[in-house]
Image (cartoon, rainbow, N blue to C red; front, side, top):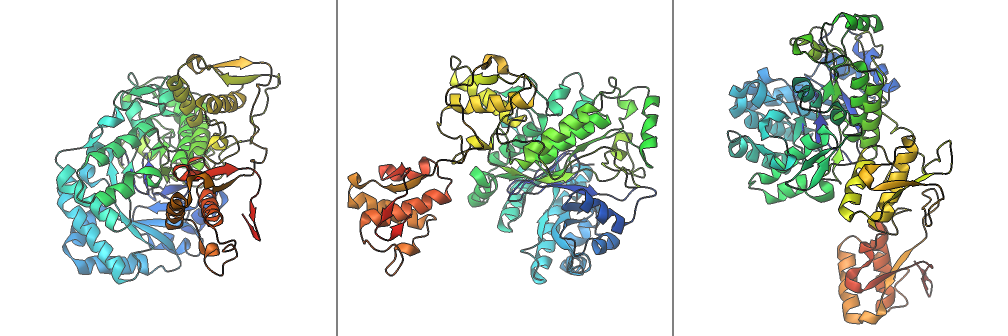
Length: 596
């Protein structure tokens, strides 16, 4: 089992499986088959469809599964296991035959990645020299059969590839692999448009150090958080901290491809993916009755309960969507405290789903898109290792659920906060505290259940663009959802009259347009016009013969270009700046027959 998968660039985040990036956060499952009395692949496909699961990762290239998944529109990842790594590295012919037999042979199956090896540095370090050559040969084979655009080559990596993972800003790769393996590996992934993938298992960290780690921190529940003094960022869950540790490690790597590092890590293009992430669930192979044996455990971990498993998975699904989970059958030999109530699992899962489906990134990379795979689809009683390794399943082998995880909905998210039953109270920001304290509390609220979409640039409640206004919106949304929680370490307070200027997220955003500021002169307008047309604005309508060519003036042409750029970039203040050449208006401009 892998401890962490991170895919950076289109990141795969998972606790025990694998995750990969996508344009919007998506959650899949790791489909392992080492279980007795396991339902057949056609029945598995129906199970996936019923639960809205749109991605699966296989640990091999099982023909029966790949056939059953054909024509379903479910994205499928296949694996070249570690035992075949040396063969693929040493023979281009073997790599080609493998791709022809396990990828090309299934044209109706939506295969989107090949995982070459699994946690090689952790599980079989002697194969490390063969890893990149094997990946390159598989890539060459995909090119030769015309599938390189649709199918990407990845390799899931365990988190112990880092020498340190907390604080995240001190994350860096081990000296034995940093320059010799990771740098050329990242360059390869960049050149091929693929992703860096890691497996993440916060549960295992808690299981091994329950005296040092707060369970709430693992389960995405409210907690005091952990400060990274290197960046000044607060972390309110371990998953974010693990992911950001990998981001920092990659940034510290002296890659020979600066372009690649930029695509993978910088700005809104940053994404995280995991193939494995999960938490043990309590075990069992036949159905709910098997879970009753939990009472026979002499010593169990508080993290390893169905409740904590469900809490963790739903939270992580919302954030990453590939490869994460929590075991519900603890390993008694590891020791630990009494089991927690089942509500913990549900809390974790719902919080995580909400986090991922809302597109929440991490403290260090807030715009990162996280997708991944939950480990795992089934409890697998035939797997070697500890009990919890066999008990990460969302379902028993017969297809009955261990607990409910929603792969489709981010949870209740009304556009406007609903007043409490008492009805007449709101949670507002305390303007007397520092902006930093407000920002930290705002980040916490948005990362732990508040729906903060309305205060993003260009959205209904973005204006006024002040930390007090945004914090008040986030605090109140959190307050209404959490049945009266309004503290935030002194950054907020409850009031019983609706605050002046309270934004209604359900109201339509005020119409706005970006027009030219003629006071700056034609020279500056022309320069700004050229910039807009060269950076995304569609300026075809102001070319000769276009519908807005006339009136043929700098003001009209610049206004058209500025407004098109403004619309395409979220209608933010910054997107209508143009170094002072643009300004926002709230009446629809009309120039002759040209209406913006």
